[in-house]
Structures are given as C-alpha cells and as structure tokens.
Image 1 (cartoon, rainbow, N blue to C red):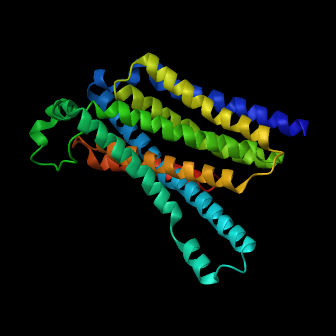
Image 2 (image 1 turned 60 degrees about the vertical axis):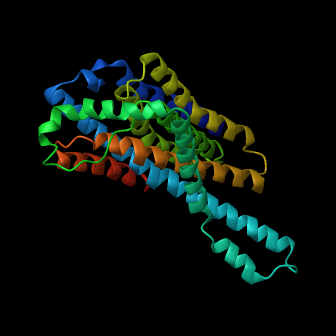
Length: 312
C-alpha cells in the first residue's frame, strides 16, 4: 500500500511538472509571438499553430468525446439495470431497452456545444460593438495576402477580438474539467502497474496539449501575467483530480456520483469541440498561403493524438 501511494505521489508531481514546463515554454520565449514575426519565422509559427490545431482536434474527438461517450453509456446502462432489478415486476423489458438504446452521450455532448453557443450569442447580443472588431481583425491578417484573395478561397472571417477572451476561457475550463477527471482516474487505480500505465498515457498527450494552450494564449494576445496564471491553474487540475482519487479510493462509488461525473465530462467535451471548430481551426486556416502544408500539419497533430489513443 505504501508503494502504491508513493507511485501515485510521483505521478502527481510528474503531471504538475510536465504541464507547467510545456505550458510556460511558449509564454516565456518571445520567439513564439507571431505578431512580431516575419518571413520564414512567421511561416514556421503558422505551421506550428496548425499542428497544435490538429492536436486539439484529436484531443477533442479521440480522447474527450470518446471517453465521455464511453462513461455516459456505461453509467446510463448501469442506471437502467439497477432500476430494472429494483422494479423487475413493474416495468416491461421493451421500455427499458428503448430507453437504453437512446444516444444519451451524443445528446449531452451536443448540449455542451449549444450551451457555449448560447452564452456567446447572448454576449454578442448584449455587447454588439464586438462585431465591428471582426473586420479590423480580418484586415490585419488578410492585408498581407490581399493580392491572392481572388485566387484562393476564403474560410470566412476570423473571430472578433471580443470573442477571443470568452473562447479562451471556455477552452481552459473544458480542459480543466477533463484534466481533473484524468487525474481522478489515475488516483482511483488499485495497483502499481495500472497507475503507471494510465499516468504514462496521460503524460504522453498532456504535454503537447498544454503546449498548444500556451501557444494559443500567446498568439491571441493574452498578457504574459494572465497567460502564466492560466497555465498554472490548468497545471494544478490533474494533480487535484489525482489527490481526490487517492482520498476516495477506499470508498464505494455511488452510481449518482459516477453518472454526474460522466455528464460533466460530456458537457466539457461539447464545449471543447465548439472552441476547436469555431476558434482554433478557422484562425489557423484564415490565410490562404501554403494550404497543403497547413493540411499536413493539422493531420500530423491529429494523427499523433490518434496514436496516443491506442494506449490512453
């Protein structure tokens, strides 16, 4: 038991150290600031941003969504099975099977998606002045390539400056929820091999995802102080979840608590997908240069996360 606790504490420190290190790199080094970059330097940063976009896409689809669907379906099945056992003489099998076959996981993830969509729509409705900033933002990024605008297709206007802080906050919150649940899963393991296997799987994709978050904060113009605070808060989430898992590892897990955790993870997955498709990918694909190179970088980032999903 002491060995297991020691291994979990080591995993806690590893998660904290790796997350802080990878997140601070793009925040502290001026080389990653795309607004001051020109020529080849700017091109490298653009392609690096596309790789991070692919990582976010892979994290959203291959990890957060997949884990949320698995958890929600499992808990819903358990819930209906318990109700059927408790009231086996009062309900028909046909009704139970119909309820179980409903795509609850997809519905909850969609609700998370539409929740952020609603909140952002309300913000734009209450503060319509932000919509005028989108034209300025688009001119900043598109002015250097105005001569090519008639040749290449457009991916639409960039998100306005008023939208970016909100979407950055949503990104951090959804990743924080997911990080807590990842750490909780590690903390709940009852054997040393299981702890090490799951912790290595988390570490394998955690560093790249948090590096992408730091890069996203820097390239969206977030101040260094707030970027560091955001990275620190995100870094603490997985150790927090692991500590919670260690605290409750000996207790019996109630079905209601497990179902609530699965639902929260589903909502977090939906919010993450919203930010990925409405903020990250459009921003990286807004300019028309090197479309095939951008596609290759997005695909490479996604492929890395898809490979990690074999073990995660």
